[in-house]
Image (cartoon, rainbow over all chains, first blue to last red; front, side, top):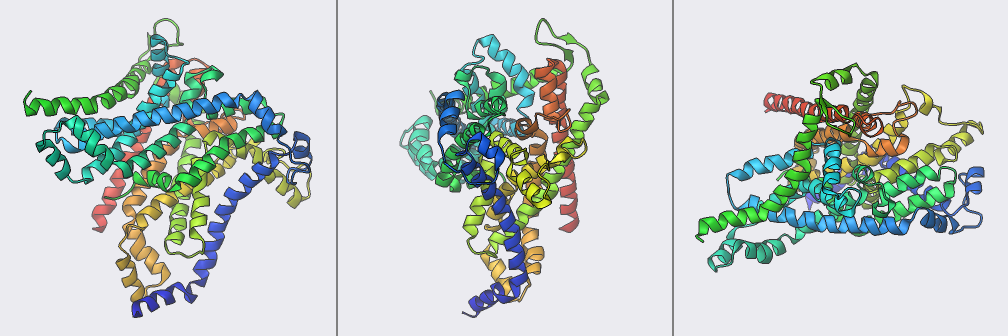
Length: 286
Length: 295
């Protein structure tokens, strides 16, 4: 009881200075997130002329015209379809490969693992720029340049180092007993992976899937360099190109930016816990 | 098949696909890039071996040094801006100094999830002619023609970008620090409070020492992330006006894909990896020096 009283006291009156400073700092950062997004949202319902004449004002007569025009001119149907395709398929493949590999690395105790693991973690330091030229040449050689395969395969490879790190460190921490019992029962290693390791990985898998999906959804350099056809491009590359052609119509450009923002806001509202875990995971002390 | 062979086969069946994809798509191209960095090649015909010429040319190019200068500023805003501010924000939330902490946390972390292309274009508009920032400044200065003129000044044009970088990534560091602060045993904190420790003492004597490892990790993240920074600046300014806001990654991109100097571009990308590894090694050295000194 006494302890609680002491804690209460400390968190009360004598902290006024700290509290005021805290509200100011945290308030400034929060407002700089909210104000731009609110401004973007209501401005996207204003025609170009109105934005120019009165950049701060609320729309006189809110209209969906910008959204209709942007959707048609920017071919957002295609961009959305591709973004969903790349993010979903690449993410599922990456996470599955990372968990399989992580199981082998965490539980088999083979000597070569140390070498292979270091080799993967080194990938975290490599910039995507240092593989662009050879990758482009390789893809032309195989004939998958400017195709969906040509985007999907590099997305899987680029996601692997961090996903493997998450998978391996998680699987190291789960007890060996279940697996050993299954081995004695005569289940093979692949059976153990599907029937025991995969279900046990559910908590880390959620973080892996969501973090990986977000990364693929927002990826920009690779798709910009490796593709030129609108038919295979995703939202970031499409929006970037579209903004270049609509510099003279703010309303349409704002609507395009809203197409890029709103899905992510919904995603964030649904999965913020897992997203935070993914970002924090690289630094957590075990 | 005996158990040993079975185990070995299973190991490669499980790890093989990942190792293969990674080796083929990442490692092999990096090696090719390294080889290409000693050649002159425009994408047609055979690359010509030129020895160290590309590396020497990089050092002679004033645009490269300007890119380095801008990169240093990006690293500085990350290490000296995002990390300390992120730390303080995390501390505020950890100690529950404000009501509605979850809401503030959610808002400050939000920008990192938005595509950097969207963030860049949004802020380009905010600072642009019909932007909210410009309009507010016009209202304050009573000058209807006020524009953000520092974007046209060579030395200052990077500043708006640094502001956006601070805006976008501070929340990430806040989340990292907060997650690690929450791992500190609550009893440590309670004991200090009962002993009558002031807020400043709690921050400097208890929380900060628990966080030295994490500060080091975030510094590594900040340095390697800053050297790779490309998307945001590319979408915001394309390195312009007049190449004022180029960072090394954009310098590499322009040389490679605009001027078709594939060999030269490869040399620049090798250079980025080398500086990144080098800086992290230096940081590692400093960190273990201090660790030895204080423990």
